[in-house]
Length: 352
Image 1: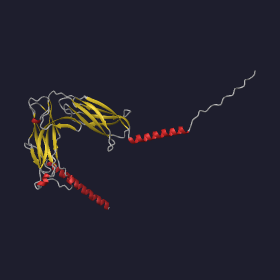
Image 2 (image 1 turned 180 degrees about the vertical axis):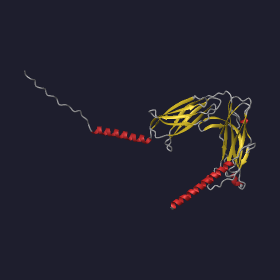
Image 3 (image 1 turned 180 degrees about the horizontal axis):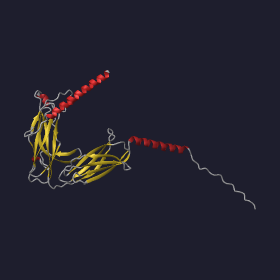
Image 4 (image 1 turned 45 degrees about the horizontal axis):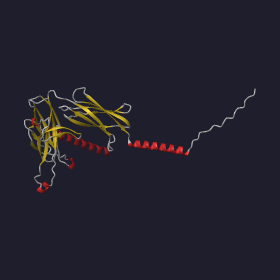
């Protein structure tokens, strides 16, 4: 009976805590800033942090990608949202930079700083403000205007809106403390993909497929590297499937390759993970990738790989060695001699 009462009391506390969490979250969402004619800043008090590890001490920029289809001479209005999750007031700076594609697997795009790319659009993407400050847990929505020149050629143009923090110095800190402090400046960006309507060169294809074997930490996690080459002047969005079959052609796995962007005149790697069942023997992986333009343009690549778990290989090798050694000792100890048949005596001839 006491156990039931204790559990009942605990359930009530859990229910009450859950209800309060939902209420606080709903309230925070309801006060999120919305952009009108000018950016609106919403500053709410930071929640009390009982554990130092609970402080995120960063900021969030949304969305990560904006895709626009427009005609020459047209203007399009978009917006970005920044939320300060640090525990203090932070100043921010907004910049616009072009970016291009990269052949580096870990860096799909490269920011160009003050330089312009062959597909530059930095002079036509204009944030409404370039500096602002946010209190802890505050957010702001910044309008961004995209102006397409009247003489813009059909094709793709690419630029980014970058937001960086400039941490403020504690007014109560001593000068010696400030000098010995390392400031970390973070910078995140929203990528703008602008497609000017008209006839453009869409050209790309799947170039290669590779398999990466699991590590000791994740013995069942296989990775497949997809290499897609874009030869056109607009970005493409390839997607598709990877199918794995065994020696007998039976399918043992099929998983999607989610849509991703491949910049023009660049090579884009895509890594896809597969949590495989127990494997032993010879397998074939086949990738069917839609190029991202046209409904029936699908490229197929296959790769064959062997899986022989080292424990099974060692056990099998030991068994084979034991059998071979046993046969060697057996034949060495016993000598086999062919049995000779006794000569047959001649049969007496019958007299007539």
